[in-house]
Image (cartoon, rainbow, N blue to C red; front, side):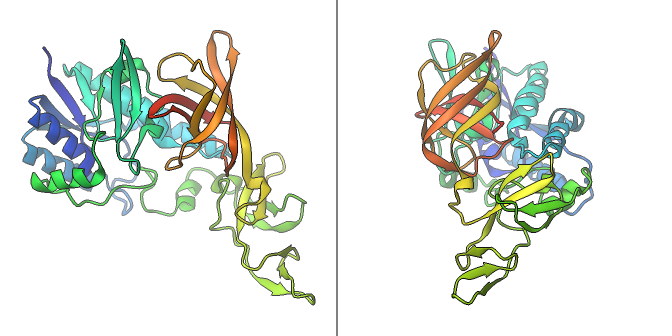
Length: 375
């Protein structure tokens, strides 16, 4: 029986503990570091070099073979190019979802199988369960770290070859196990944000690839509020970086913005929409403005973990990571033999539904799949 498992070691504590647990369980474990980005190898914002050092150090303590593989070309073609296309179209993509489907569980999986591995493992907080020959993707036990949202595009083949050793643990226990084992990255800070952007300002990074296209910032009524730098630099629900500020009192004691719009004192402004044809950014005042609340959405490029659309109608769903599941009804539309799109109708209005992000559908703890929000 082949008990070789290749673990994707990222340099973080989660993947290191995954390798540790598999080693303790008697598997033949090989650690593999994926280099997915190399444009800024010497840049202050890129942590690839330090992550590689941390991964190698963890592998040494665990006592497993370790190697690196370069997927930068595949990443740029399959993930980053799509990332730029989506932003250029005014949408807000989620590159982590695409990276998992195209790199970690496709390019990396193919590479590991060629190495003779039976399966791959990562440090994702999720679980896999086989029921009557069908593989289910389950939420991670730690509700604060569950990452099934980012894995919802995985198919049956990918799940059948995947192991998530920390999916049944809470983060605090993972760090405790790492500390007890003497792993050098046991206290390493979790990485956040988009991997290839790092800690640099997002707009500065994007301007290197997409030119500025300034336009007008308007209210839904058409009142000008100033200028924006380019629709691609903003996302629905964004509050920071709008440059709208300043209020004064009128003769009646009401509050008026510098653009002359009456408002409640201190109410912040949010991005509520984009008019691509007119290159206008639509902004509203107040977190609970009706323009920011929707009960329905449409999604495209649907993928279902089981390979088939869910049979029943009522589910839970989330439209962004770390959001609680919200009750909804699922309606599917058919394009030939493939279920390529669906609509969700929520019981309660959802805040800042964002085109380009993923709508992911759940049946309790089971992640069923999802699609890319179109509107």
